[in-house]
Length: 148
Image (cartoon, rainbow, N blue to C red; front, side):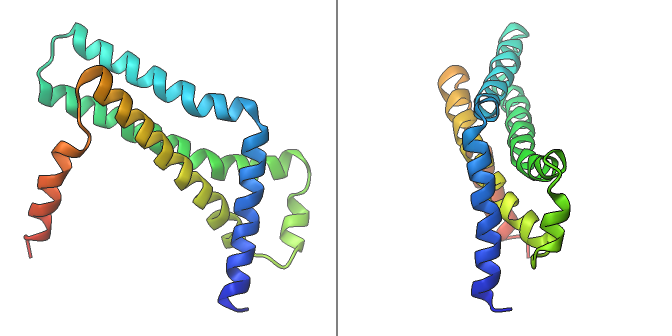
């Protein structure tokens, strides 16, 4: 099959994942609610414990990373679970598509949602707790490139 055909099949699963997520109000609410709760609870805990700025950055980066990965992987899980729940998984495997199309299509939507959550949590952590997500990584990337 041509690359264009492969791209169309991947895009079909991505579009299906977008449509399912857009119509599911709980998924949209959950995507914004739990990362917000995580940033607030972890950030307020660091304020209560009077931690220094480097420790706060370390802890908040962990919270942002965990929630970003969780939101990104939910699309893969939901995509397969919706097929199982609607009893249409066998139809997906009978169709002339491969499992890779389903995984890549849902994964692209998951990456987009994960990037959106990363930006939202970065803005929240910057405005509420003064932690810049880009500050620790810029120097590290420069040093890692000059190691070889």
